[in-house]
Length: 226
Image (cartoon, rainbow, N blue to C red; front, side):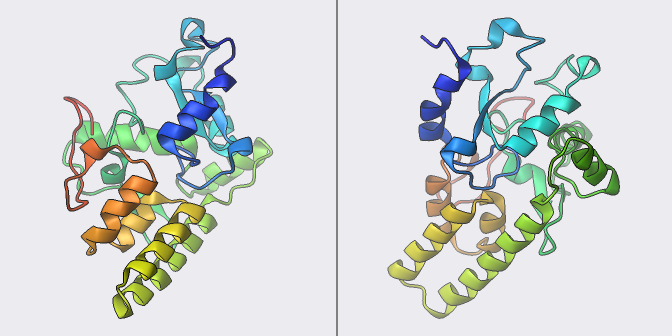
């Protein structure tokens, strides 16, 4: 039985890998936070509940904590997209400039709104207001540049794989992806390569129920979710 939420970290890493659940970047275990989906100050009875834990980088965790004030508590699970409840890979689109946006493939306005609220909650979209908010919290707003660098690495890896599609080359690519993080970017760049996508799903510990045996996205996992 847990006496401190931080004690959940080893089991969370075993289940989710050393990645931020929100921005998806790779983070050393010592720098990952065990964060509460429903804030522990407002939901004290869930402070030590496994189902209320995710892993987050300090930037996303801090930004989320400031976003979730008392006026944003009602329907918190229902009104936003969550990495442990939704197929967030299908919720967002990425480009070579490191930008993220709600996917045009989300046909439901309700799902679009859920995805947008999560972007705002973790501060993942690049806008002057988001950058200013990060600065006011004493945080470095570098996620866009990190996503851009990950896209470049993935594109270089793709070109190498297209020229030399061997097992050794694929394992090298998977190692780069795990070290860099940003599951969704690697999946997007390697969209035409089912063999690589299926192994990316495994190393990033993505929910198998979200993908078919060719690595294509499936959703939703449950009614009302993305």
